[in-house]
Length: 369
Image 1: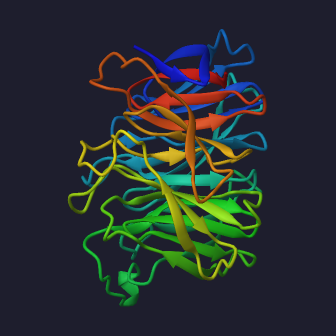
Image 2: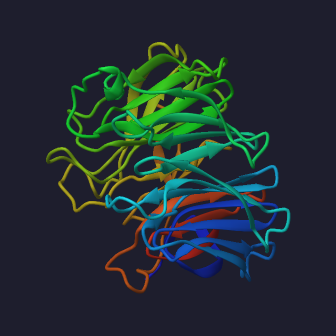
């Protein structure tokens, strides 16, 4: 049974489970969790009656759960889900979407090993987590797509310890410290680094990204860092970033993942000063994918929609940053094929409509009541 407060449903699309949804010019682009479903394009110009207009399939060994669009291009990740040699390479697929109903593959940028996990795209440059020869885990890669048929590396950055081919030795287990999700804000990249916390990179010279600072609270907190999103306006005179931990892959016993508020007024010394958790979760141990996943990545007001896995959509008011509070929520019906809701991603379009994708099934189109 749907549980809602301050949010109402405008439309619904019976989508195969998705990892990300973005909307541009009245079309929703949905990246799916499992092959053969790659990417769907859905006409949402009438949000009450969304209609599928195109779909892209992928081979069984590929995971293509992230999508970005801009400047007439659609970018989707290709991440290998097998360690067996051979087969389809991981990387980044670049499509022409001059006609959203007919995506045309322009080029696939291939990488060794796993491929690309998450990424940002500003219409020209790709900022992503990608595997590269000689490095342990994914690193931060910047590609120039001025000519999308010939992507050119514009820069890269890795956490010291990742470049094993260069003689570096990590002080963490396996690939616990790896690039997860870069997000661009002006000439800065806010890069989540999984159990390595997050870092702020100066990319005013893209060929030489420079680390300005970082924070890592795992341990003592047990969940990895999913994303760091800069609030594009001051809060009570301070610059603030929202940092979301993801409620998976814990390194011990601990509470569900939090949403953190970090003061970055002095970006060389970020200071966490408050956090948000659902009241009914508290500090009790919960099954994975109960707590936080990620906030909307383009914040437009002090009311921030957040995908909260089994607890659906939570709208968190950060107007008083020392005391963030929930002002609305929407928990969909449990989708067919799932034991509970698994809200994975949220997007807000230029009409203020909220798009909530479930990683098992269903896209809900919502608005604030």
